[in-house]
Amino acid sequence: MLMPLARTLTPDSDGVVQAAELLRAGRLVAFPTETVYGLGADARDGAAVAAIYAAKGRPSFNPLIVHVADMARARTIARFDDTALRLAQAFWPGPLTLVLPLTPDHDIASLVTAGLDTVALRVPGHPLAQTLLRAFDGPVAAPSANPSGRISPTRAAHVLAGLGDQIEAVLDGGACAVGLESTIVGGAPTALLRAGGVPTEEIEAIIGPLAAAGSQITAPGQLAAHYAPRVPLRLNATRATDGEVFVGFGPGDCDLNLSATGDMRDAAAQLFDTLHALDALGKPAAIAPIPDTGLGRAINDRLRRASVR
Ligand code: TXA
Ligand code: MG
Image (tube, rainbow, N blue to C red; front, top):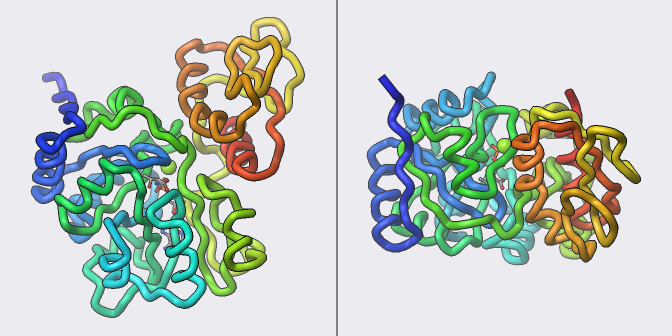
C-alpha cells in the first residue's frame, strides 16, 4: 500500500486551526518559520516527540528547539538571567535560540531535551508560526523539517519532497525570509553554539563578546557532514571546471547566483533553495567565495558542512 501523502494546509485561519488540532492529537505538522520550516510536535507529549526522531531518521536523540509564542510562556519553561533577558528583548520574536536552564515545574517531555537540564527556546517571528503557536496554546518542539543529514527546507515543497510520506500535514507559508536556521547561544558566560540568522556582531553589540564555543556546553548534533546535497561542492571557487555548475555571489557570469547584487540577506534566503536546486541538477558544483562577516559566517558554516562528503 502507498504511504499517505501529507496534507498541505492553507495559510489562513482554517489551515491554522487544523494544524493546531493535529498537534493537539499528537501528530506531526510541518510549519513555516522565518528561518526554515520546522517539523512540529507537542513538546509535552513524549510519544509525539519520539515520532519526530522516527520521521527524520535521526540516528540519536539530539535535543530539539522548543518554540513558544511569547516571553510569558518562555518563562514557565526556562530561567532567564539578565543576559538572556536582554537577548530576548533585543531579538525575539526572531531567528535567535537561547539555551537556558529548565524551570523546576516545566512541562517539557524529557526526550525534547535529551535528558539535559537545559532547554533550547525560541520565539519565532513568522506571522503563521505565531498564529499557530497561539492557536495551539502550548510549546511546540521542532527541528528543521528535513530527513536527518539533508538540506533544511525553506519551502513547503521541500518538506513534502523529503518527508511527505512521514508526516500528517504541512502548513504552507511560502518561502522562508531568512533561509538559515536560528543562531543558538547559551551557557555562562554566553557562547555561540551555532551561527545562524542573527549575525554574531549584532549579539555582541547587546551583551559584549561571546565566549569561545566548546569551552562549556556544546550543541550536540552539530555534525561536520550536514545539510548535505547529494552532489559534491567545491567552495571558494573563482570559476567552474568542465561539468561543474557555477554558483556565483555578486555580479558576474554564473549558472546560479546566491545574490546577483552581492546582498548577504538575499544570499542567506537563497542558500538552501540553491542547494536543493543543485541536488535536482545532479552535477558537481563550484561555489564562489562569500565574505565571512555578518550572515556570511552562517552561510559559510552551512556550505562547509554541505561540502563534507
Ligand atoms: O531555525 C531553527 O533553529 C530551526 C527552526 C525550525 O526553528 N530549527 C532547527 O532545529 O534548526 P534543529 O533541531 O535542526 O537544531 C537544533 C539545535 C541542535 O544542534 C541541537 O543540538 C541544539 O539545537 N540544542 C537543542 N537543545 C539544546 C540544549 N539543551 N543544549 C545545547 N544545544 C541544544
Ligand atoms: Mg536541522
